[in-house]
Image (cartoon, rainbow, N blue to C red):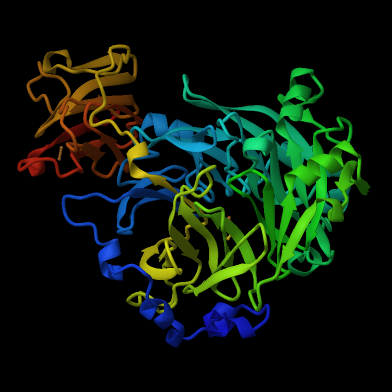
Length: 621
Ligand code: RUQ
Ligand code: CUA
């Protein structure tokens, strides 16, 4: 085993990545052979005309977006704008997406989660949360577009989400930063009395395609970190890690690392749901807030090695595994033992009114692979084996949760945060592939100056672990999920929508309507022209008065896959997209008088360059 330990493992907690040299760039992984006769290049090569087996949905971190890659080719296919404006698609400029974004211009997207049916990814929706502006979003996988965004009150940064229960009943959003209820002003001297770490039970209605909040829980003022839902026998439960149970209000680096143990919060969401149904909550600014120190019986604490970062439930739903980023061990806990401890009131006291389960009664085993440092997150394969990322010793460790035995190790370049395995968060992972999501790329790619992209390394886990491909990702993929490609069924064109009053499908129906100082344009985009009013002398010109409130409703009548049109007005800082068959609206005040060319931004035909017109704004006087 020793030979697998990268250079960095000799160093302790100091930020080790900086000391790793290029010489460590995976020469062992490259020369190591497996039973497979295929070369590594062949394994990742997807010939023209063939498609990847898996979609990878990677969080785009503080770009606020989601990135789609194909696996095993590791080719980037698309960016889905979610929490930030995106001029490539006009997202955040058109009326609908602008409204969804709720006045914010950016987001920090961390953990994407697929919708699930019976604990398996169903390929219908993808959820994500925004740590920066406390929002939750849902992406429709028929169109790869964001359907709804919800601003979550009383919460400041749901870093620990998203994760969904077995049938997408709930997505729980615990907060990373504790704040006073209503996020109102409060002196930090009153932190312990007045601050709370609120968790929200977010629901998704498939019919209306809207997110909502069923209830919230006012947890102690701690920081909550990555969480996971139970599976099968533990499906009614969920777990999340905590840190800063010290309740430090400054210099957290030191002050939040004092206590030897923090907690895993173990909660029964069926019990919380019952409390909500029975009215056992208080109204806090219109939210149903459950106070667990008053409503007992839904939430328990389990002591865990200090400042844990992640907790993951095994595919069989029997265990939850926590990794202590400041303690070099993974701790395996048993759900069955936890249920027994709950039933027997096997408590070791209380914290903030929450019962603490006896560590010894719930803990199954502590696992300490030799010289493995900085364990963060765990994924699983088809045989139930665990793969844990080691941030400090820069490697992936494969081990058996049932015995604690270390099975394999592979160095990665460098400092992996999460890793993701094929269908890894389901009740039946696929094995085959694991991707290390590395925080530091260093000298992996052509230099782009002092700052580099992050990197994703594809690891073949069908035999002895082998790093076989690497792709830059920019910025960091906090987490990703990998789904079988054939589970996703996209549409080719948007169908005609008779109920949409803004849609126009025939040239003769185009028109410009004025109501006072409101101007509504009902236009079409087609190869290779805009028609705003077919009866006008110049059908591709819009003329308004300075100060008019303008609505441009535009329908793409090319019902033809991949023929997308864009619409931009020069110097007006406006831009939107209409995909095949889609209707979209742009709303603005014509506050600048003058002559402004308008044009299609998407190269849609040989005469795309001719797809333009004028937006004329007559001055007030
Ligand atoms: S995090 S590197 Cu934003 Cu999931 Cu752990
Ligand atoms: Cu339409 Cu270019």
